[in-house]
Length: 271
Image (cartoon, rainbow, N blue to C red):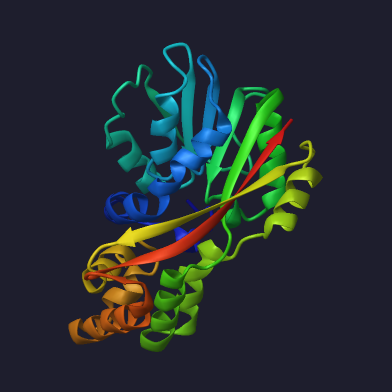
């Protein structure tokens, strides 16, 4: 999650984030990230900007009883949910959860063999500083994997436009912040500038299946930093907002829900 104060969420919102954002938007991509990481038994793994811990929990099933997995996030609410969420079956190690900043990690040099960061770097106030910190805490030859969205999906665009109409442009901008990302070449250049060997960029695409959209969009946004702005609307305005989003997504209708395309870029680099 974000290190920008305006993108913090409460503990209650973090629980909803795990239920809606993690399940429908973040979770489907974890296998791609873990697969490219090719985690080995005994490796020490850092899940940076871990949120509620979906990547860390998957990583813990791969490194075995001699491995270590640490999740670091700036958001205490997210970490509270991460600590309370059970480990996956076949997990043989506890996960260590740490509250801290990607700009200045409280780990010794060469603490990890692998760093995984899913949808975090776009929120770091200084991306280059964070990458240099990642390089510092990796062993020589260690692996870095960064996953970022390629662009705003049809769902994000529909929600952003509705927020602009029913709330204001600033709220729409805050909602879309996660999709303001470096493109493949910019991401490769940023990773290289920080001292890593040339990064390879792997594009991945999926269709995400979302349930009854008029209900889902309000539940999903209740887990986001725009929750308060949406809650300030009247019940009738929220209902109209949800109908607006559903109407915009009609080309992607799947029963009461939608099936929307989405894409990520995953950068893989070595120290």
